[in-house]
Length: 263
View 1 (spheres, rainbow, N blue to C red):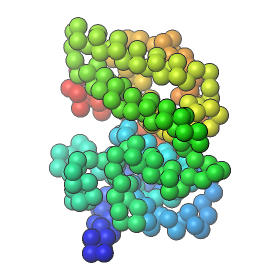
View 2 (cartoon, rainbow, N blue to C red):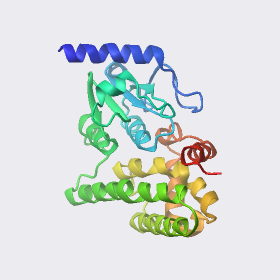
View 3 (cartoon, helix red, strand yellow):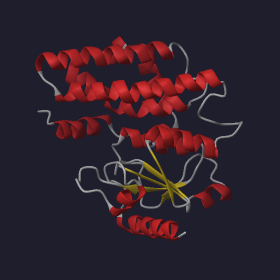
């Protein structure tokens, strides 16, 4: 109980101290609500649920999109990753990695972006609306490809943006191959699981914020290389949960150029 009390005190301190980033249109200093139907039960949740994140963090966008998809009201707390030292809230809530995103529910932290997605689905999903497929094999496949994004696509993106010369060309080829693989998995479906936006969609769509940056940096067209994937991106961006979270693509690329020292 003392630990939960301390967590609430830190949350209140963070809320009074951290406004959401002025660079991102969807953030506000108040508790954020998700979904069109904001009933009393959903609004009651706002005092219990907080998401600690940075506006340009693709991993954290997953959580914010998922919360909105399931209509969960939450408080957004900005953690500026451009500052080297992590806040007291982050150090307390995630002492192992000291990283974001962190979902705080009832004063208790949940860390790891894919872990957070599953927690959101387990806690607020229901028969009418959930993120993971009901079929166990399809659930396992969604988790497999989400892990592929984290272990393969993200690490290849980093090498592609940071490297030079022949190494950059190798990384570019690998990145395109990985995106083409996802393009094949998607096929002609509306979303990865079929007709409904789900777990794997929430896991991947934040990284589309760098697709224009990939094209500019690598001199290729994703519309030509991955047509299914790019149609899917446009379809996802029609959803309020997605368009209210994804940052401007040019801002994302400029920020990554600074992070990776790209001239």
